[in-house]
Picture (cartoon, rainbow, N blue to C red):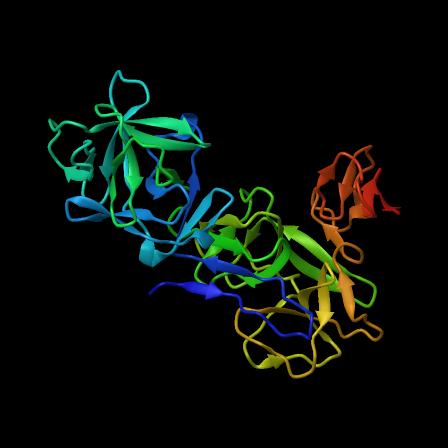
Length: 373
């Protein structure tokens, strides 16, 4: 059964919006290619309409279409749900012919045969002696369009099935490469900056190669501050905080039991029995452009998969803004940014090096916190 967890919104109070993320364990993530140097024959590919509306699937001996929807195409990445996943294409290099490939449908081992000016529809065949089997990849409009060597016609989509055309058409298709692997966790951010969720219970995950996405646990919380510590590997069923500015990320699957339990993590997972008390229970949310931990109103339920924090110390604040109050230990493993060895570089409170402060805020310089006004 498809294992899918969607972190739901929590109504903390009017004007408060939980920073959440969606996780997809069975879906697939594709990246639009912009250069022939991105082609590696061992990879798997999909042919999609340039705007992401239609991905291909086999339909008897032709190529039909299915629609993931424009909402799933963000910044050159295409998220395709399990029910719409296309048959994968293998690119088989043609010997002694530069940038020339046979397009093989992986599931059937059949090859895509190009159409002609009079019979435009693509066909699938196992006949290696058939004509119009060779294809070149042409860089156009920051994408790789697929041109038949024999006819010079490009693969296009007419909204019902794929065919060939040479005209300047908005329906040109291009090549996408599958960048997730089976069992990887696809993370679709709903908002920039911070969000929260709980990893799936069946698998451990590695965040080492998620580029600018950072995963955190909370190791301490008191009336003065909330302390976040970056982690690169997370065991199954762990509530965490994410920081990142892209829309899609991939956390790599690890065997369950690979990562030790993060015993110093004080974040907790909701289970529908927990509700706010307007005093000690907090959740991540955004208000007036600031993200942080807010006190949750009395009676507001935390559903399964949600994340909350408990601060019982007397005098705790109503709100701890991440960009002002939070001490983040994300660089070189230090628990506090003030412990960073002195150097002449500037860092923001997320541990990312910057050229120089461009706006007001708190920064790290020469191992100390500096307030720029």
